Image 1 (tube, rainbow, N blue to C red):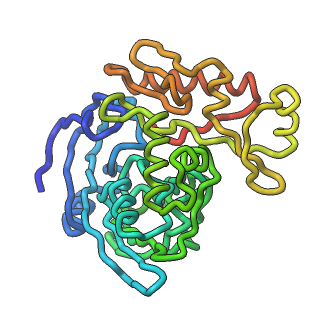
Image 2 (cartoon, one colour; image 1 turned 45 degrees about the vertical axis):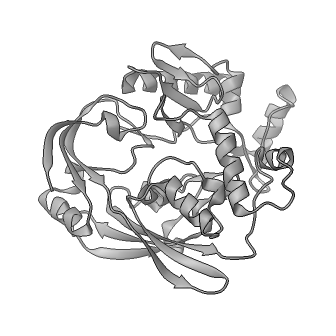
Length: 337
């Protein structure tokens, strides 16, 4: 386990922001992780997984721990379902595709989401009408300061829209080392009505889709709208889709009758943040190397040499414009350091 000094994080964040870490260490076992944690308090460590949900605005003056735990284990299996334990350092999309290719259903709508498995519960990642919590069973944790190992079941995680206990009262207290998901082996529950899934299935003349078909379609849709972080720096969706009161939505409908929306419950409506940003005129906007993607306004991009502060300044400009035009406060989905 080698500790690197003044280590570049450019290749460890999908925005491709060039900042340095005071110290950097990669851990591949829970024993390694405990050793590192034992040497420093939680406030002196920054955990980094796939780097897909972070915007660095300055050099990191603490030890960055790159969590690279690997492995998948079958915990329980019946004729109808299977429960799989996945290490935190596994790539999320690769795990989803492995599930789909083995006919394990439930996560196919979350194909091509960047990042690693260990950060999925923190953000409660979701897409196309599905969230990771729908299949989540539990996660295994290590307390950063006491090194005590524990388990947190779904009910205790307080999952919400892009939210969990790990972003609230348990923020910075634990390291997630493994996550368990229960998936179907047959009679899969398919989700095809969200977004353009049904339309693309129809285009391909697929009337009885498999979970592999759905995964393939979602990959195609996402690739048509979202930039590849390996080519253009980005973190996927930069802002959360705002959830507003029905009364406020009806007021907005008066001046914007075409506004797309999704019913959350009797009192709440979710609006696509990308649509709001596009209406404010930012789709395709660029200032220097910081910009808004021309195909998906929800994605902020680094065209090459943008700093984190330049992208943050653009985000704040967009927030101010949306607040003025729609009286809606956009919240960042990414973590800003």
